[in-house]
Amino acid sequence: MTVKEKKAYLQRYRLVDADIRMLGEELGSWRARAMKITAVFSDMPKGSRGESRMQLAVEEIAQLEERLDERMEELVRVRVQVEKAIARLDNPILRRLMKYRY
Image (cartoon, rainbow, N blue to C red; front, top):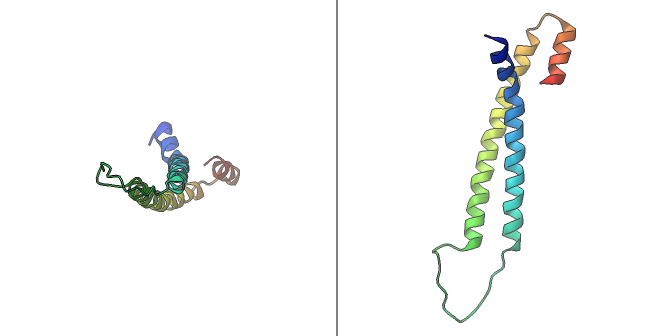
């Protein structure tokens, strides 16, 4: 394994963590939108797209929560792999530096 491949392997944790943060922000945005959606009652007929905005928001939130759960599970797996790789280092100073870095 080349140095570049080793770095990429160790940086997987940071990438998954960043992805989780992005999904969390998107989820928060959709929840905020869902809270702003209010029902409007009228006796006038209106065209419909077949789905309400609230239903659309709830579906998007559910999908994001599912993706977030999957990424969290992946984050735990990657963390364990990275920690095992770092634990195999002989030099304790290098081991500590690698833990701080990754």
